[in-house]
Length: 263
Image (cartoon, rainbow, N blue to C red; front, top):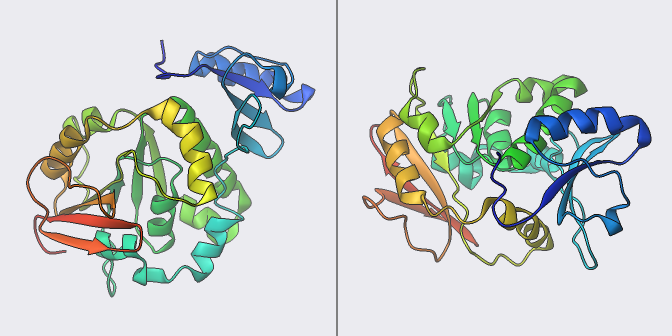
């Protein structure tokens, strides 16, 4: 049975004609199907099948708005066009410069934002997400991006999603080793933006904190051929393990960089 940590989750459909795909999704994720009004649902979180794809919605009074993965429009489209290219912190941390575009494994993919930025800049990116609901949202966003055509579809074709436990997947990796592994473990930090608050309210009950972050780092250091880049809140301690060889700090976050050899 799928482990959904500390909250109850169900699948719902926003339109009657979408009940069949919602039923199939519920079966695949081993979740109940609820076809009730969102305000009277028994589950704490609803994975909603709508005409514009999947969304995750909390229920009850005072619940934050729905979260979905959208690579075509909105914040990620703006970041793709105006985000600063290889000057972005994630690009620097991964080692993009000049014509260098390493292969990247994003082992804590989440909603895929960092992976999308790296793919938009020309990297081939493999994404691993272990939480089934978050993986479903990410897969839905990638499918819609590929269907959109044009530049966004080309970017999405450089993104390859695996639904797996990252530590297990890295330990049994049989393909060519990624040059760079990107990690962004869940951490009990307190960014103040409304977007982060909304997502954290939805995702923390699902995913919990990554208490196995030291094992995640160890597996990444063993697999990566060139470097591991770990995203952390700016004032958070480094993950237990060997000290980073370099750090890159921004306003609210930083990267701990573990170099193995030059890209």
